[in-house]
Image (cartoon, rainbow, N blue to C red; front, top):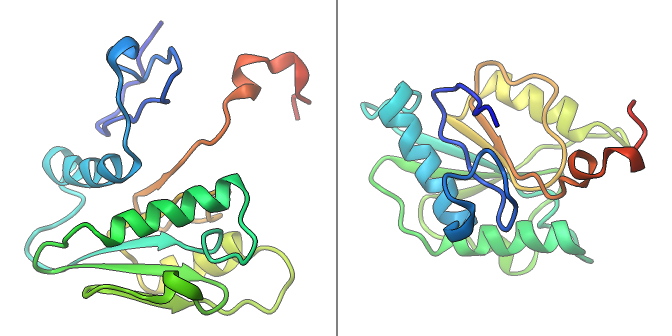
Amino acid sequence: TRRPSSPYRRVGFAGLDSPFNENPSVFQWSPVSSFIQISQDMTKEVDLLPTSHSTTYAIDASSANKEKRTGVENYAFQLIEAMKKMPLLEGERVVLFSPTPLSGVLAILPTGWESHVLSWKLPRGWMQGRVSWELFRHRPNVLFVPSQGLPRFFFGTPTMTTIHDVAFRRVASLYDPA
């Protein structure tokens, strides 16, 4: 299997025999440490995170902020809660994007963390429209989307996401090719 060529470190799929994994039989994955490690690798390898000024990590908290959470929403919630326990370095800050104010324990933010409510009047398109606009106006150093969907435009912002299901790759015959 041919490995993709890119200056970015690839994160493997837990439990899958994937070309992204160095050694699938001993592969261990932690979403929190992966996010932090990828961010650090970006600094080392391609200098995307300049160290001379503050670093802003933006995280989509829209799924984690739902009152009734299913698998993806619960994953996003647990991941953000675990990240909140990790200390930030001097000059680092984390901004949680959501279309509504954060609620419950998600709203309790440690030092260096803040919430930005990105209002959007339309019933659809918050990620593609409003988050894209926010990336244009206030570019974070990195955007992390732990749920599904990505902004339409990134405006040069390095973006990471979580792939929750690769069944469409494994059993392509079950899915519409469109």
